[in-house]
Image 1: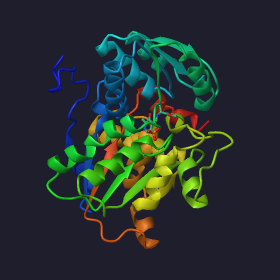
Image 2 (image 1 turned 135 degrees about the horizontal axis):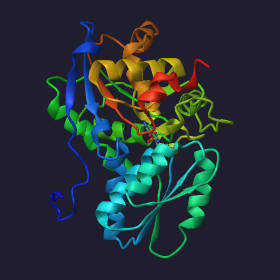
Image 3 (image 1 turned 45 degrees about the vertical axis):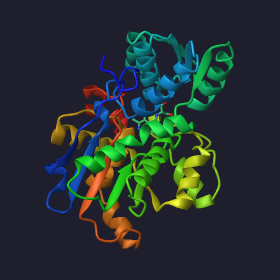
Length: 323
Ligand code: PLV
């Protein structure tokens, strides 16, 4: 494994940032930061591996994480590379496919709770032994710090500054927090962010509207990886410091965007990521322009956050939405 320059193994790929010709279609230039190409399948690898490396330096001998799936895969992969055992607690909604992938990476899987928040309470109880470190999938400064270089890399890779950055923030809001931190490091403080959620998982939009954290009664969207009932306080705070526009798409639009993306770019991503792609494939940008939130848009940077809970069959069945 390559060395990251400080003697520790390099667990993160410098992903490509490509100009999408099919998604641009002459309206605006769409650039895609392909975080789906991280080895465990999502952007989570950035923040989680950064957290895990620091924890090992500080004496961690075991990791425990509760995850909707993608954070668990990132912990399992990072732990494997760092030679540390890991236990991943998955909610019952996590598909077997993802549980198997976590096991393949050498981690122990425990299935507990119908929603991430319940799995998380259980994981925190497991992590009380000395040396055992609980890895939070989205609410930790090291996680945000690890996510942020995706933006500074994109700045080096793009021929121009984008007029807007699109990201699927939600779940816990860790990705959004890291993206905004990266934008500040890149000198992109004035560039707005569109924070995409699906209807039924809109814990961020609700929090921004209320000006305080809001706990949803349940996640009713198919975008289960976005499924934290409450976002982290840091992501809400960012909305007071940066132009962040929460926007919603339907499950149908998110799944439709995954299908279109597979045709346009020959890659499979989860509906959690489809929510961001749907910002381009559906009418989110003109809608925000009409509301006076966005000005002229010539170029867009979309964070393709990825996700492993997807198969060709699931996409063909449209995640059961038509039945
Ligand atoms: N996934 C979390 C859910 O936390 C997890 O445990 O894997 N896009 C994808 C593909 C994701 O998997 C997630 C979160 C997000 C976006 C949202 O990221 P966050 O949580 O940092 O806002 C409950």
